[in-house]
Length: 114
Image 1 (cartoon, rainbow, N blue to C red):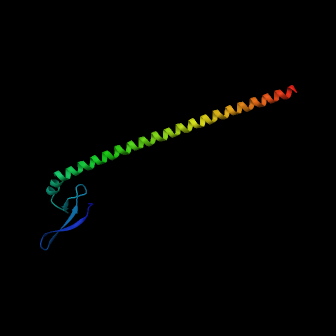
Image 2: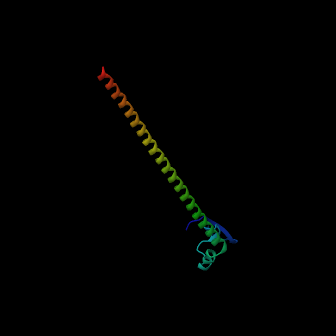
Image 3: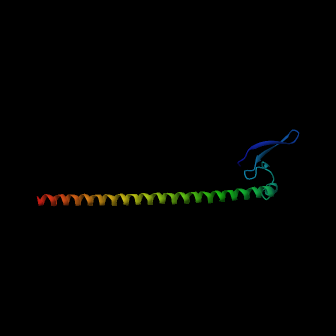
């Protein structure tokens, strides 16, 4: 099991191996009786910390989703602006080409008249 192992003196000369509960941080005796483990797992401190951890996890997931949604909207706006910019550039180029063609046609017409 995970946790920090420690030795905690119970009586002079007797040491018990301990570990830290990964949920609430309480010291637990390694290989303790199942009733004590069950009592710890259903205790107020352990249950309270578990609820807090679950709430934090949910809040982080919500925040991550919000950030992702904002990033997606921002990327969509940038793509839309880029598309509009390209369309405008194409339109301006077509207009310039049409004006150039008109000038060429006008010059050809003047050359024919001469």
